[in-house]
Length: 292
Image (cartoon, rainbow, N blue to C red; front, side):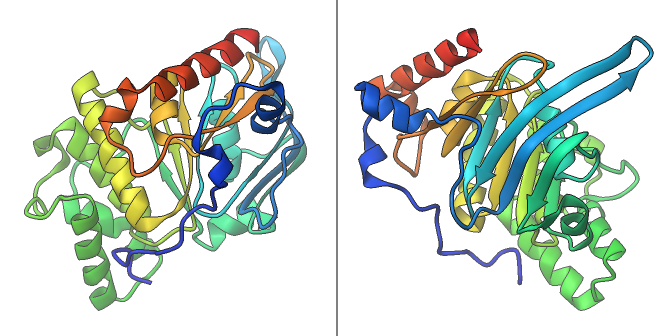
């Protein structure tokens, strides 16, 4: 499937979530414990724990984390540094394995999902090859996958169009701005049409103005592509603006303190950040972080 082809499906939303309810019953429905589960989940973490062996001894990064993520859903992992957000992402990317519990994507192991090219990964640093041009960086995973040259060219063109980098095909990374380099990293991650897009604080190194701009551009890309996105952040405002749901994590050992449905309507512009609903959502997220 060409990555430029829009997908018409969208996350199933409950009309009752359009407002921020204040009753205890509604609050309980929105804040779910670790055993949250939805049917037809793309991603499943079940009782996942992770312990690292260090020179100072064993360090438990995660403790019995369970979470289900639905198709085409945009989920933000929110928490302080060291709470295990990136550890969760690394296990979804099959870069780490759990010490206990299971991680599956489409009912198969994360290792299988990686081998089947279902996972795209975007880091805080775009991790571009400086000796390759924009189009050559996008081509890299397609070359590894031995995609035919003619199809490769069409996918590169579609990826450039998706992230608005047409006209920069022959530029090198050092000739691009920080935001453009991140857009290039996203284009490369989407070039082989993965099922899941994992993003580890991709805008963390950008200035505030560029970061805001990239947030809007990411939502536009997601609305066109409708990938299942797991986005790591420690910014309350970023999580509130981007997500369908926010998973609030506690300090180490990382546990899920709360899972909050985001009631803000889509599509979103920055005007939503001035609404009472956005401010209330931020307050709730901040409260769960302090309680976690």
